[in-house]
Image 1: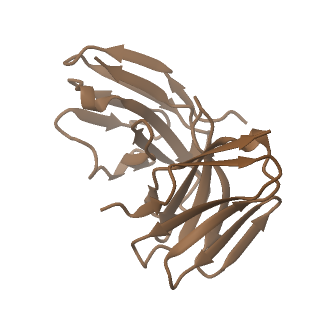
Image 2 (image 1 turned 135 degrees about the vertical axis):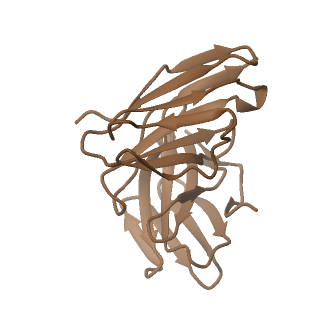
Length: 113
Length: 111
């Protein structure tokens, strides 16, 4: 069974540029999470979906970040105007239901210059 | 306020020793405590987890000791191997909702 896949693996931007991250969860997993992991810190939840519905986006900086999961499968996280403080690894995770283990993808390492 | 705290940013042990990683939490309602292992360039992977109804969970060389009254727990890695060198994250959640992660302990096992 394929794991959670993410692309790109790396991104380097200038401040003010936009970037999108893409996640393909494990097949059949209805819940999908996006986390931000700054260097030397633990993952911090940004947003999560059950199927196509947003369940919790309270930690998503809504002025510049957006996330969608239109068909309840793949998901895209977008940063509209990146800042140096956005430098981090962005992790996607999925699980089959609320009582199951979360499986993480390898992450996208973002550097904003 | 950080919900989950790990007492050491880093820990070094010799091969064969027992590594002990400590963790504490704030929210008494947390009832599920997973530990994740992360290697450089990879996402975290679930290592072992315990529910608050138990005070100990063992899986091979890995054991969680849980103290609900003190709101702390520890991960013991027996007979540490160089391949165990990684960052370990303590985490907690309430009723399988959002998971809160600590900032991790980087373990180095010297041969």
